[in-house]
Amino acid sequence: MSGGTPVAGGYVRQRHNQGKLLDWRDLEDDASSRPPTYSIPALRRARTRKEVVETVIWLIAVCIIYYGDRRSNLISLLCWDGRIKRTALYLSLVGVALDLGLNLYSTFFLCGPQKLYEKNEALLSIAPCIIMLGFLLFCLLSFALWPIWCFLSIPLLFTLFMAVMVISPYLLIGPLRLSEFAARAD
Image (cartoon, rainbow, N blue to C red; front, top):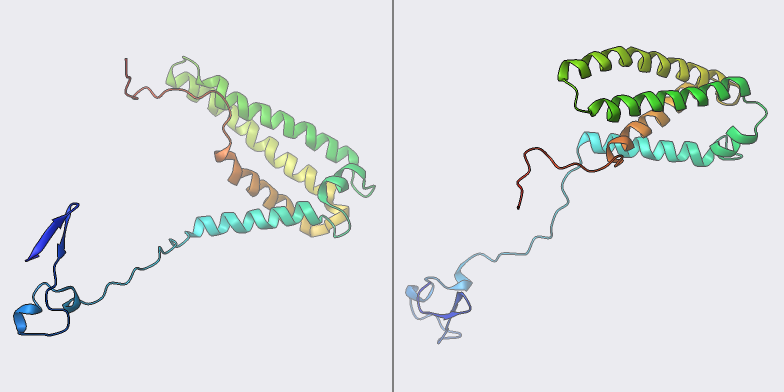
């Protein structure tokens, strides 16, 4: 900019003629000759399809847990409703604990100082057990909840399962470990 006075890292134009336009050179580098710049408010970024699906799944899961069968919530239904087949429910809860134990074992205890092929062999032997146990648990829970929700028990359980899958990456379980490639200060 021409004719400016340096002030705090920038230039401030000194305008001597406040209202008159003497010739075309006065328009040169003048702030009034430039188009006005409006401050645009920070726009929120568009949500991805994955975020929208996760949000919808969470809303449905919260509604299922909170509203239950429109008379009481899901937790009180599981505890005190006589329509639920208790044997199937208790077997499925024991299976959930077993499935969770196998998942934790395959995630954390197989991360020791073993060779890579040993870890892969152990995971390949556990994976079919986890999958079959999960399918059996889904069937048992569907059978246990069928008297309350009929055919809606299948999408209900699937939605709750997906809600658990959405939250599982955000859980911080286990000690934090330094990366092998992290820069060290000492």
